[in-house]
Image 1: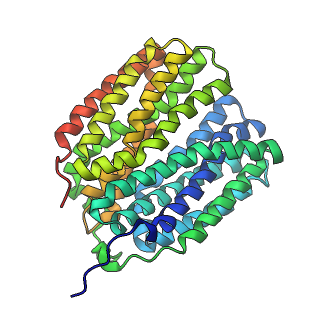
Image 2: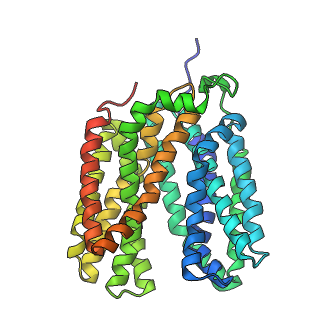
Image 3: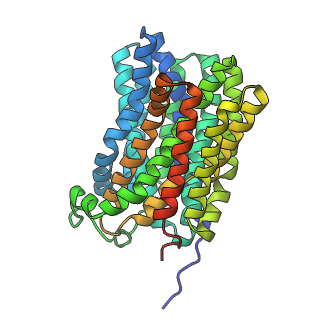
Length: 393
């Protein structure tokens, strides 16, 4: 019997991460510009915020249907189709001045983002050997972070040189390149799934059978995502409340993001070596400390220090939610389970800014930060209780 060839990152790195890097740079270039585009088309500030929110709403509503699409088309072709739809949708925004068109395009981009994210996670779950899984998925999360850091810088340069509509053409071009690179991916062998579209159980059955995991580890994932998104919302608000200019606020946020980008592979290595819980729980403790002490930060230096602490916790836990979902996913119904898992985690992502807004309305912005910090500490305890100590066999 011939021994299996040893796994090599070089054989999969470009094909696996190249499309994600390209697409996320495109997304990163236009996501901050949606509100500006809406205002440029005559929208009020409230309407512009609502249109921006359609991106997350589209993704949330598409999480479960994305499982159905990915199962029938396969991970590779789901990514290609999602990218090609993005090419049409994003490029069309640059040729129309309609506010309704912008809203529809933003919503559709959220839908394609759900399909892309699920298909990419499923592909890596199956294609990467278990002993490298956390590093692979942490790297995937890190690539998304790089896109979120680099994309806005490129988008700003495109807008300054060619005007606001051309940024959408740039994003469409990135999606087209992502589709082309995806075509170099090898197809997953059907037996690796342990299922096909005909044999797979219905979505409801898969989620019902996995209800115990979704209500334990899934709730922990929800708290992780809630804390992360709350951190993204509160840093700019805290800077603005202390009189920072928009440029200074962006600089503080970029410094915090640098920790995200720098630590993702280290966090994945720790998870592969010692287990998932030894990264997930400490990361939540660190982010809880950062959120709890943010009200004490009243000057530039202290605010940057707290932002870096939050970036440290967020960066080292890159990919932990995807890794936990992949570990828990069954061989039969994997794609549908991951669709349900992503629905829970994306719900947490949507709740973070809402939690900040609700508590800040009733109390203060500093009070909202403390509440999220306490919630993060509770999440750390919950994760310690429910995440298996050992790496799955």
